[in-house]
Amino acid sequence: MRLSQLVGKRFKERPAEATLESHALLLRGGYARQVANGIYSLLPPGLRVIHKIERIVREEMDRIGGQEVLMPVVMPRELWEESGRYQGVGAELLRFKDRADHDMVLAMTHEEGVVHLCRNEISSYLQLPFMVYQLQTKFRDEPRSRGGLIRVREFTMKDAYSFHTSHQDLEHYYVECYRAYQRIFARAGIPEVVAVESDTGMMGGKVAHEFILLTEIGEDTIVTCDSCRYLANQEVAHGRIAGFREEANALDKVHTSGKKTIEEVAAFLGVPTSHTAKVVFYDKDNEGKLVVAVIRGDRDVNESKLSKIIQAQPVPATDAHIHAAGAEPGYASPMGLVADKVRIVVDHTVAAASNLVTGANEADYHYTNFNLERDLPGVTTVDIAAIADGDGCPQCEGKIVLQRGIEVGNIFQLGTKYSAAMKMQYADEEGKLQTPIMGCYGIGIGRMMSSVMEVRRDKFGPVWPISIAPWQVHINALKLGEDPVREVAESLYTSLQALGVEAIYDDRNQSPGVQFADADLLGVPFRIIVSPRNLDEKQLEWKRRDTGESGKLDLKGAAETIRGWVQEALTSFEAAALATIQM
Ligand SMILES: [Zn+2]
Image (tube, rainbow, N blue to C red; front, side):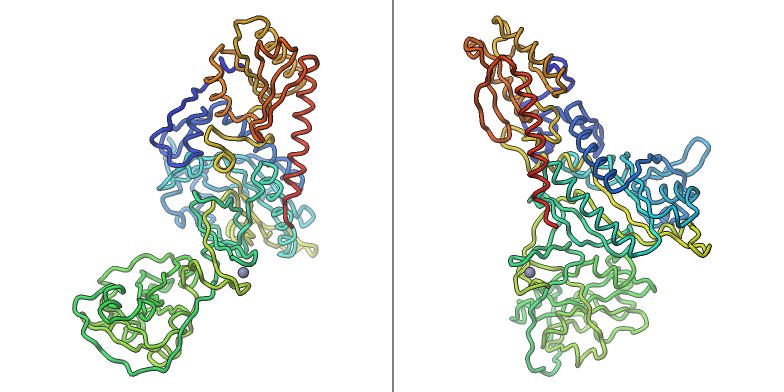
């Protein structure tokens, strides 16, 4: 590629709309341009990186027996009704009508598509297990897109789906896929990605892992331990929260006029917020009852944990519903509610504490000395607490440390949610019809590019790992007008191409400052500088973008020498990357 011809401007100023460094570099380096909120076009350098990531992904999917397919982005409503997701998924699923007035959707994942594709092709257990995958555009109408390609509405995803005759077989394959993911992230230059046990959310299923790149700019919170290798998503992490037990004092109703919040009441009564029981109302559980979540006043309810218990999405309740259950907002208590209208969910922290302050379900009054066992007998407590820094690790005596990360991939043991709903069946050895058990496995390709950019950069631009760099060699020709610079640079460029080396050649006769700033923004690992001074000594200058090393090489046989370096760098990069994987 000649830089004079490359489509896409590079520029110095940080764009005002860029929230993350990688977002700024994506725009400054001419990798991508925003078309609409969360919708981007890719320019050649960006697409070249994407293609290389896709190649690694394909190789690793093929290695574990994947078969590449391609399913459409536009799908009829009927398929999504079969799975129940046409109604079940909210506004992030884009619904529209075609000219014949048929309801259509833009696929945001392809479970429906893949079951539709495979249910007519598979009839016998002899055809199982198998895995199909695709690299395809998806659309998810995110309310908050951000950070360049980190969170977008239209994106390319690698999604894979496996089908099995037994759970055991799925679990075995799940591990293979897990390892394939480790290889993918390592080969793409982010070996520090960790696998975290996660919530299965709207996908359904039982076991799931998210692959997280730990970085401060991430929007996911990851639970880690300061002493062991414990890792979990906030939604599934169960930390140990220290309690306090003392002798129970008699319940006492106290006047707390106008003190509605936990902080106000605690300050008014002169107790720490940990000595209060907080009541949070949600509308409503799977039986339509008002959800009364009770937790120690210094802790917060984790709504993902709660949603699994109440089998519904927790939504803040209206005052009317709260009153109908006999409660008083601001002065609420789990005691004295209309029993058949409420579902009381009490966190372990309340049982592990004594003499708490709680409401009296009467305006301007609270109780002191609430003791769960005595005052609300027979309640089984559960874990609905949001985990916090300093909680006890569930696996050792260490302390929880919360870290930020970007989710770059995920794997799910789906089970039969989609295959059963969409009536996919095969005949087993006895000829009996069975439903295949599924796994699904996703990687966001664009997000992965942005993630690498976020953690592999310096203040001048991205420092691409050689495995996914847009080009391998960047030729800078200084003083192109002076003989024989142009001739040498042109000849080197042509020879490298002939040898199969991916080269970008700055043929613009710009100042070294302009050329090097652009080279930094393109982040190519090897830089070769052709200048009159070095040519006098029949030499070229070289510089590594990643290591900062530099030196000279003989002009004679330069293209072959450089090809050797590139090949050696590719091989050693991959070996080093794979060596970092912890099994
Ligand atoms: Zn630990």
